[in-house]
View 1 (cartoon, rainbow, N blue to C red):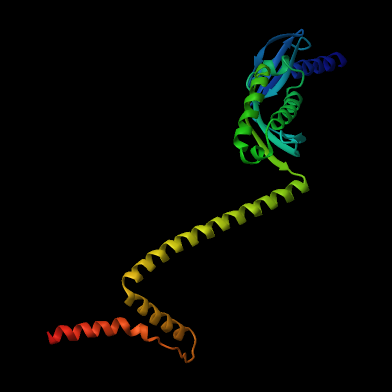
View 2 (view 1 turned 180 degrees about the vertical axis):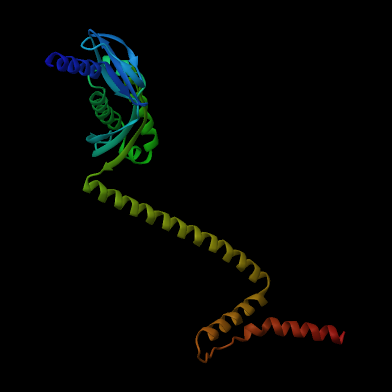
Length: 255
């Protein structure tokens, strides 16, 4: 009885150590007596008990959050910046053999690269040229992790935490910029209005009757806006053009 039980347990032990099932996104890096023999999977994997050892590696894209880093920009502004990187293992054997812990190594490399790249940029570039900075970070990380069999696909700077004093200074700068634009727009409007007024003055000087008509139109607008009786003197000079016109008409009729 006991030998049979021991034999059954031994069979289960051997099968448990000899049979592995890997998912579609997993690969198994197999070592035989400490030597690398290949990467296997997915599906059913048969190993030699005690002799073979397998390390599973996931091929799915990993989204790794980079903790906030204290960065001093090129124009000596202290900021806190965090980011996220997306990468995946392309060569499982290199990810296991070339580096001790590829997840930890990639995280540390991302932190140091983030501080190094952002330290060479000015604050305005950090806030306005985010795409260029992301591209530079991605290129540097991808180049360094290539020997580990890792492909860095995307790096995104998520948040830039500015000091309170710098936020106030930027708010004042933005307000001053808006005031400057408002004054320029107002000046342009005054310039365009002066041009139109100059053109109107030229037309009125050539045709004095237009000034009289404009004067009467203004009085009409005043009377329409205020429900009151308006008394105003009419200079005799206002009727001079009409008198001249009537005199010229009578002379032409007598002739």
